[in-house]
Amino acid sequence: MTLNKTHKNSAFKIPKDYFETFDVAFFNELELKKQVKKTGYKTPDGYLDKFNVSIPKGSKGSNLRKLNKKYSFYISGIAAALVLLFMFSLPSKEAQEISLESIENYLINEEYQSDVLENLLLFEDLNEISILELSYSEVENYIFQNASIETLLID
Amino acid sequence: MQDEAKLLTQLKLDDSKELAFKTLVKHYKERLYWHIRKIVISHDDADDVLQNTFIKIFRNIDKFKGDSKLYTWMYRIATNESITFLNSKAKRNQVSNETLNENALQNLVADVYFEGDEIQLKLQKAIAQLPRTQQLVFNMRYFDTIKYKDMSEILETSEGALKASYHIAVKKIKAYLNAH
Image 1 (cartoon, rainbow over the protein chains, first blue to last red):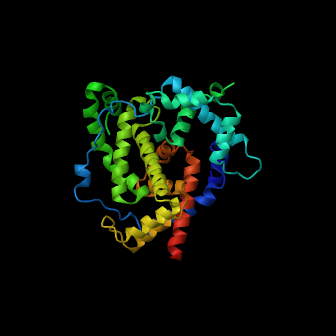
Image 2 (cartoon, each protein chain N blue to C red; image 1 turned 90 degrees about the horizontal axis):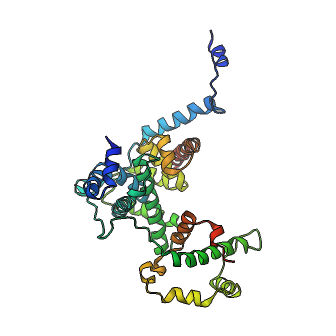
Image 3 (cartoon, chains in turn green, cyan; image 1 turned 120 degrees about the horizontal axis):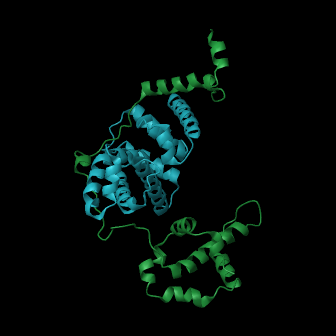
């Protein structure tokens, strides 16, 4: 049985153009490895042998900042509003940067309870949260991992 | 590493966690270091990121569900920590990631922890021309010979896409080396 007849009878398939591209890719890599195989990086003498990890004290568990449920709702709500504002407020196909003033105006115009925002700044527990140290990406990640948008929308 | 399941159990128990963690560090520090180093380039930066990576592993080991291999989970943390580190460094220095990378490569010539010859230096410059994901794929496949299946778990990308990315990267690097 010839090779052609063999592969026509089998039920196996291959990706499109596999044989056409195989040798090109294979020989490209082979030729590159003939020229250079290693990165050239090195470490200080004994670095890896002596390497040790200093776990900060009190780090028994997760370092994820556990937001108090009460405040997490408010913080998540504000962050979600900002995300939604960004998503739905773009007037044209080109993305525009939203100025701080626009965000502030939005919060004011949407009648966010200023006392709610003030309270967020007064409660002592906020010292543990250290809001100012939370980056936008940390808050965003928290929202996407721990809440659904529907529960965050404030009526 | 033998008996990963046993190590994982010990890592999740308060009594045995610290000792198990030391074992983990001992077995994986070298692999993670070189993975990180190829991303951040400088030894000092790699040292920082390696510390951060292991701290993050220690703090989050309870959350590891075992739906991937332990080492691919750790590699993913190392990759993300490296990228976060570079993004923060670029922001602190008020430069783009590309500029940061260019500066790092320029410093490589005088770097005491780089013993590469001219072709190895050119290779690093060639790699730096690639988009970030292609850089990761190339380094992991070419130098670390990581299987596409494992790479797929680390980068959360399909094996097919990774293979294509790798072959494109090799082609571009070859072209760069031939042109320079």
